[in-house]
Amino acid sequence: MIIDPEHLFRMLCDPVRLRCVLLIRQEGSLCVCELTHALDLDQPKISRHLARLRRGKLLLDERRGQWVHYRLHPDLPDWVLTVIDAARTGQKATQYQQDDRQRLSAMVDRPNRCV
Image (cartoon, rainbow, N blue to C red; front, side, top):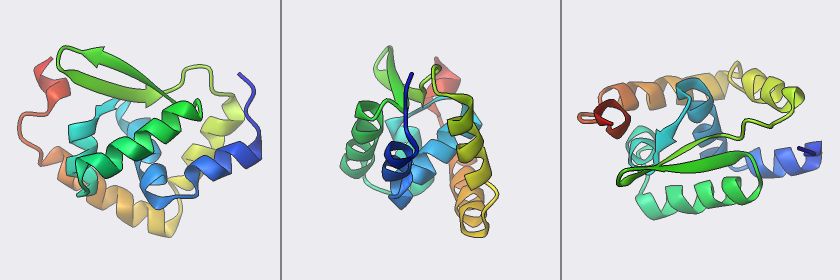
């Protein structure tokens, strides 16, 4: 897969998309309802950002029963994963991540736990 830095940073420049990618990187895969719960945002907004990330080849989606799960594209170059991992260490990202993870862990009946 060929991805250039400009493309990556355009995909990650939006805070919602960045938070989605960081959480998906940590969790492996998440469905829209989990991201909606974790980020405390409405479903259409999350879905719109996930669609952009999917079109940008950063994410893949997979249907599991009634749920659609998103994961990082397995063919992303190593340097892209390094950038994503480095973004996790930023001060603001760290606070968002803590809040997002806390809300996600508090979610009752997570679909990936039920599948």
